[in-house]
Image (cartoon, rainbow, N blue to C red):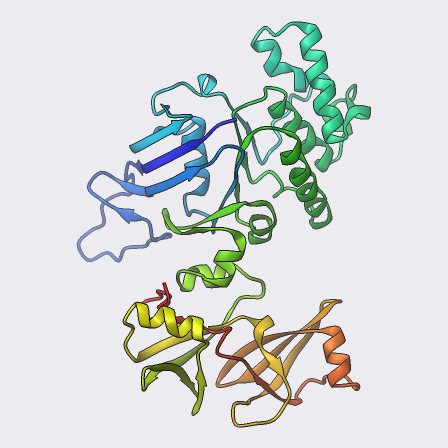
Length: 393
C-alpha cells in the first residue's frame, strides 16, 4: 500500500536531430517542446495518487505517458522534479529498491520456465523460503484463474493466459505500487474486454496502488478511479471518468474522450440582458442555468466559439424553430444503437440513436439520402474558445 507523489516531474532527451541548413524546411513528427537542453518528453507533471487508488494515464502515441510510468519504475532517469513513494524521495533509488512491480505490453515471460517457475522467479531472487513461495504463487494463481496452467510452459498458453501469468508474477511480490504499461494492447477485442473485467476484480482483492498506461480511452474510462489525459508531454486534465466526459477542459480532451468523437460547429456565444445563448445557423439556443452561472463567474464575453455536442446528446425528428436539418449519408447499425452520419450545416454530423427509440419514432427505418430534423438542448452543449479552452472552466 502506498501513496505516490509526482511533483513538477520533467523528462528531457538530448536533441540528436542534425542541425538544418539555413533554407532547409524543418520536419517535425510531434509537437514536443525543443529547448536548449533537448526535447521535452514530459513537462511539469504533477499528480498526487492516494493509497490503493487506480490511476490511468491515457493519450495518443508519443504523449509521454509510458515515459512517465518508466520514471516511476526507475527505468528512466528523472530530469527534474520529485518522485515520492510514501513520503520518501525516490529519484535516485534503484528500481529493485522502490517496492514496485511492472507488467509490460509484451508479457516478458521466460519461455524455458513453467508458469509456476515464472511466477516464483522474483521471490527466488529475494531468497524467500520455498514454502512461502509456493503459498504466494498458489494464491495468485487462484485469484487470476490460472491454477490449472501452473505446470505448462508459456508457449502452450493463449495471449490472455500469458498476460495473467505476467500479472501473477508481479502481484506475488505484493508491491506497494503496480505499474502496467498497455498490458492489453496485444489481445483481440473480446479478450481485452474479459481482461478488463479481470483487472477490475483483481484490484478489489489486492492492497496495491495501480498506475496504468493505455492509449485506449475505453480502458481508461472503465478502469480508472481518476484518469490523466496527456498530449505532447503535458497534462491536459485530471479527473474521474465522469468528470472528464461531462466537463472536458479543452477541445483536445473533448475529442479524445468519447466514441464517436464530439461534433463541433462554428458558432457565436451571445449575451443579452445578462443571459448567455449560442447562435448557430440563425437559431438561438439558451444555455442551462448551470452553464450560465459558470460563464458569468468567469466573466466570459460574447465571442466566436467552437460549439461541441456529443452524438448521444442530439435528439432526432420533431418540429419547431430550433430544429436543424440534414441528409443521411451513412447508417451504422451497432446493435443497441444506430450511428447516423448526416450532411448538415456544411459538415458531417454524427448522431447516436438507441435502436428502441428509432423503432418507436420511425417504423420503416432510416434510408440513405433521407432528410432528417434534429436538435439539442442548452444543457448538453460545450462552449470552447477559438484557442480550444472550455470557457466554463
